[in-house]
Image (cartoon, rainbow, N blue to C red; front, side, top):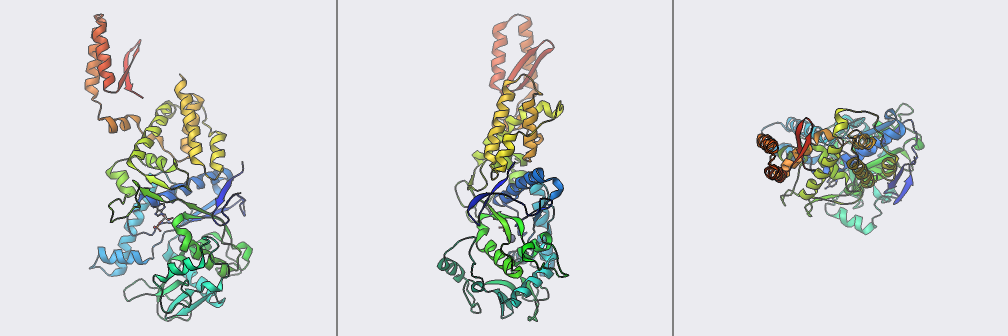
Length: 484
Ligand code: AMP
Ligand code: ZN
């Protein structure tokens, strides 16, 4: 089966050829840990988790390395720490904020059915590599020191801008917002900056005496290098440019410019490499009820509150996310969650028997796999799941092959149906079913039937139907279930 992926760099869908099929390497920009992750942050985590699962299927679970970083050095973290713990020394406050947020993020994405990545580097663990990259860039004339900052010199890289393909005047206009006097070109960006007293600080690259801290973009160049490229020739950086490329780099579409553009500039110039990654993948943006998510608008939806306060099972939120192709924008609505719940609830009903008694091996159908291999066409794969559910509906056998395959396909997509009880979902929409009332009515109906009072028996059946309860008369008595 041929995997095709859309590459933002070349703007085309191409067959994917790993550099080394024994070690397929993917890097995805992870969260900056200063606040609860919102449902938009969940999108790249879920999308690239599906790709991770597919790559493991295609190349073998031990032949894929997925790196997703934690950004634990950032001005936003410092600001949040100072605001939340004003009496604490800043570094201690930062530790509190990052540890708390980090744990929350991991709990949230695990509840969304995401596998842990192979490696989760933290920026603070790779400061040495950042310094080494920066020193290389200064030595090669791609960066310069100005007032204890190190800046990347954009004009030193003739093909800067290849990923976002932004016109030069637009990039200058964007950069001008906060252009500092020491910048030689308005597009130049910070690799290293001085720390104020009390702020986190590390020994600076050569030529700068005062301690400082890295800029955001260099963090990802350093972490992807440290985890995905082969150390060579004794140094941290490999001197063979051809070896300084990995397979896939991902993140949200908002990162294309400037973050990924700048990562490419840093990595390619430091290594003399033609590319940083062979394929650049970006998920579309998510908005909430038709509006851009923002705290001031009051429509900021965290994963935590959806899971805990609204008590939606993670599998339903994951399914809602996956119903839209990863490159399309999503409008995240409450109505969308309701319909995702119903659809997944139906999958649960039809595979309930399989959960308790697997009678044969379930197999993910070829149609599902080929849809996924076509640039992660999950919506098409889901349409195959609906066809399987339809087959189950028509079958009298609760252990049909279709039921096994449907369950296997949900597992493959990381959708844990055991969390999705159809009864619970029904009750969310229609109110709780009073079980003792149901059994009283069933007893009354049995009595009516024994007395051959068919009119009364039918009336009771209708009353139960209005409560959403369907009866099945068997030779052993009457059983009931929730209407589908
Ligand atoms: P941040 O912590 O803001 O750097 O974002 C972490 C990841 O979430 C990045 O890959 C972003 O592109 C992605 N992201 C942030 N907001 C959204 C959104 N509203 N929709 C989709 N992806 C987003
Ligand atoms: Zn990054």
